[in-house]
Length: 621
Image (cartoon, rainbow, N blue to C red; front, side):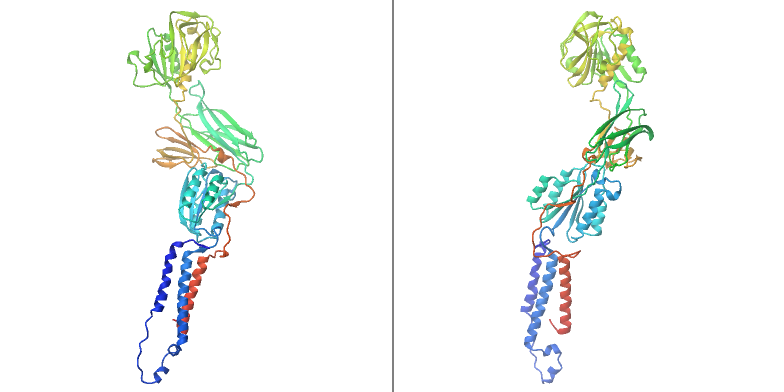
């Protein structure tokens, strides 16, 4: 036996006061009387014998001590072994996305676990409960809860969120809370077992851990694990969508699903997928949408039990024209200007000419085009570069100038698959070489003429670079063919796809807290997408998938995209596992809602009534 509230033990000193009052009671005064008739008029209790008065006084003292002792024991809250009674309970409840799996609400693991928790804690109404809920973070929702309505209301507030669960954070928090009070138990309620090493560490530290596991007997789930809108390579203004559908490894059989692709709420495409357990499928599709329109994907399967990963969305991003800084040295090539004007008229480029005397400029473009000119090596920018007809160089790599040029009637393409030479044929090209290159290893030759590179591309010092040591105007056929405008556009767009430029779309996992300004929110409810207009800025925590389009700033895409949540666990044999064994105790466990504290409290009240009755009816005082 042990006490759950030993802090009341000093109240045992109250037992001394009845004893002191009994030992040091006042003696009756001696008063002389005239006749024996006086004693005949006294009350019955005053005509008792001396030994009977002593017995009544001892009985009164014993009853007083028993009342105080019983009430003190009720305050101390005695219990039997550690498995039967705990000083406190830290209840850790998983509210991640997988806890909301189920075709019906009553099938959800979280709903079933809450019913089990209420039933189990109803047997311990005197034990205080600290409620901890976890998803991507662990939060203490309530402290020192007592059983009954208060606990039921607190558990009702715990609802599954479309957020990936981080069990390690909850384990650490539960261990810290359990260490605040000796004799505390940890109750773990989830669809997965906690870490075995953590459970063993808690057991060695003297903290029992009871694990309550609820999972679906037949989990079937397909989820959208990835979605992105991306521009088509070398086709500025054209977009495609990429999506990945994954089947849970615990699926009992293959599943078929439909993926609805909608633009601004209108059905644009419909794709069919069939996946075996643990399989995955990749979807690629063209997207025709205006900037600012939402593009959504909705997965529908007959037996799918988890709706949190069935919807993804993204706002069609704004794509500004590619900014090209054009610096020209001596003898500018008119055909280069003609090609740039053609690309500008299509709305794909925004070139501006920078005089060489004003180098370095204040504004940095997306791509630099240097024609017959290069700045000193120490002032080269970090943006992608295109060197067209470069002058003599020693740094950063050697370029030897050919003053009169060298005609190359035969050009051989060795990098056919490279985007820079896409849709460009070299069969009828005759190019005049103006320089000889000694390329670094990171630059790949794309055209070769006379055994030397005539066109090269690659990455150099963290930037994309294209080097073309030839003159368009001096070439015999290159200026008359459409190959050069296509080649120049390919080089500009390939350099403009540098990852450092980015698309300006932030991909945020659910459960992240961010500052949200005014804008439009397109959120996934589990069945469809609902658009909201938000007019006030505030800190928010994204708790469901969707897409955010602010009035100012970069848009954000909020996604679950968690393989751990989409891969639902399967129910094992046995729902509850108790890791702390119960020891033997001579204090038996009471049935129902009865506890030893309540029983002792009723016993104390009964003793008070008995003492009062004896005092008034039989003069026991």
